[in-house]
Length: 89
Image 1 (spheres, rainbow, N blue to C red):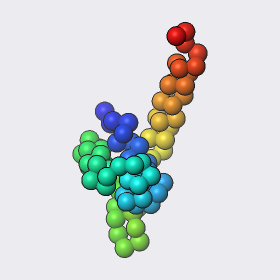
Image 2: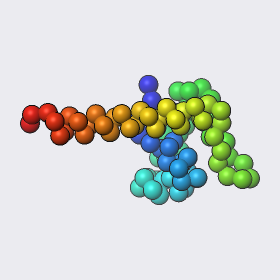
Image 3: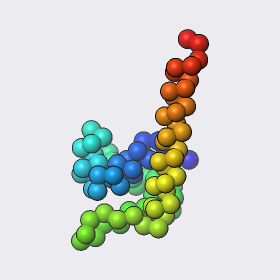
Image 4: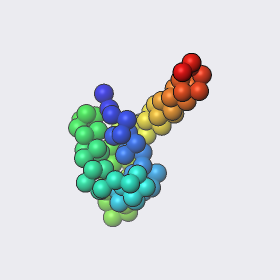
């Protein structure tokens, strides 16, 4: 199962366009971000991102992963908010 930090790292690269920009946005070292991406790709068994002369692009599995990852992180944030705000202390 993918770690939420791995998914956040992946989505940050997608949203910011590069590992450097994503690492900066998350307040991580690039090496930490890269380790998280590598771990996620290893779990998937395939690259999620391709780098070429035009920048970073999503692989076919990356395109599928980005939508599912966004949905999962949204549900996770909603769960945390609901439990935090609605549950008796």
